[in-house]
Image (cartoon, rainbow, N blue to C red):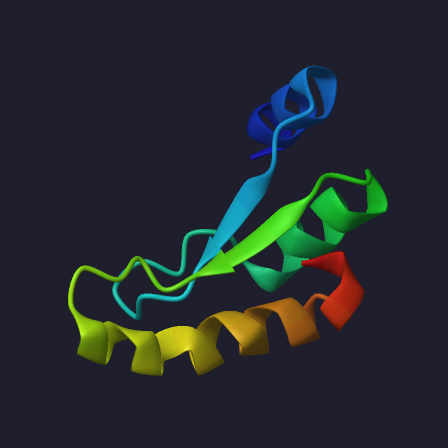
Length: 73
């Protein structure tokens, strides 16, 4: 993850907190590291069907545990 975060910072890319329960790709710890390096973060549900939007709470929880506020995602 250190390499991915460094590359995102170098190239001005955002990272995703994937809220789909079987993914949850960016942990709270790494989300906080990305935030500290001023890397934009998106919370996404990886939605392919409408009912998957219900998973947004999982992604928001990861962001909150990483101390990201609403203006940081």
